[in-house]
Image (tube, rainbow, N blue to C red; front, side):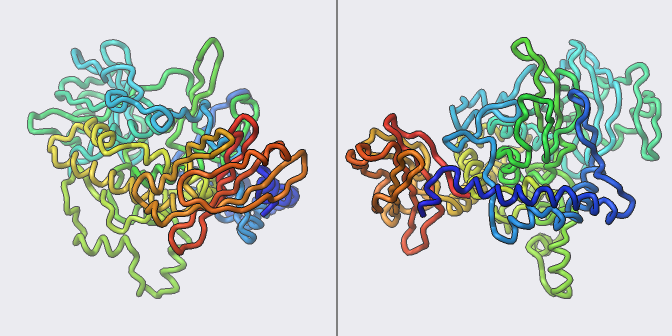
Length: 559
């Protein structure tokens, strides 16, 4: 107990893993020869200043599903943590266990509530493509799930237009706009997305415009070839096209962001990305927005000039696989693209085990039961603790209870009215579609909050006057747990220099803890290890609150 009272005691467990790092590095060389057709990961190390990091779907799949999964047991530090259940705390949090603003993440809605209009606007720069004149196509984008066109409008602004599938009109276009607004409000950097509706004659091929056809060869985009492509693009009742228009980001494109390692020559990138909480916790936000397609090739690093200096900003892009988008298959979010664990369980069950997504598929009769604009977006068999993205990144596997609690706390900051306002930006033609998407998001928000608040002790907003420590219990505040059956067990530990001594233990039935003024005459700092007890259940993980003569000096949630 006394060891746990020291803020960095738990973090110092890393010294054991650090001793194993040398062995890991040595054995990685062996791993390179164990993979067929490969001598190294697809991507290399950073050698030049802000070198462009190229990647794509296929390199992502190879690196994550084959190379890193195949050599997982050769990472001895990871093996040690797995065997002995030693989690590693996020390395980029401040003394209050929060993620500070950076070029990766900026605290927005959860720290200071955005207005309804700000939520709807998102990262607004323009009102979307200028449709007062024709849009010139500069090139075509035909890789990925949803092809599109890069265009330039009359004002010279550049956009990427992506369209819906013929059998799911409004699904993808609405999903991109809505999800981008939520990611921006959460704190991530995203491009501007808008719904753009225009007549066929607004699109014209630009001089020298090229596209890759189905054979993979580059072709000139002629008017006749454009008309052929547009035959597969759905139109509304007025004969107009509907697209999600993402504004091309300003700055110099430096490729994709890695979820592992860091750019060592970037002074604003001091922490390995798998130790960044905002990257580790991406699966929690993805589970809320049903974003199966969270991967490195759906990120961008842009070199921009801010306040007279160059900064590398890290963006998330391509949200067409959110809110039921993508290929609209029910197995998505239940399994990775290549899921060895699920395949092994199915093998052992000899095909007799029916997976949750298979039950869902069977119940719906292999059909979408609601509007095609909503797709497979509901909470049937949704499990916040078992949501899976397309690829199994190490950073996602390293997510701890503290990381999950942080993300859930942000999600719970969105009220019903906030969610309904953001969903309106999807511009659904049928109001019942917007109502259904908002309903699922509201219900899923609460499922996620309840789950992660049970995994941790969800206490926040600590305030102290040296006579009493007050706080909020988010499980109680949000109605997930009953205040009448909740108590808080507290171990009080005094610190003077390097010496620590347990002073007393106490129990409180309210969200406040009395402090004895006499403690301060003997000790320089007081540490409180607080655990919530819900009825007859076992105590939750601790929250460490550090107090000095000025009040609350630090907070740490147990991983």
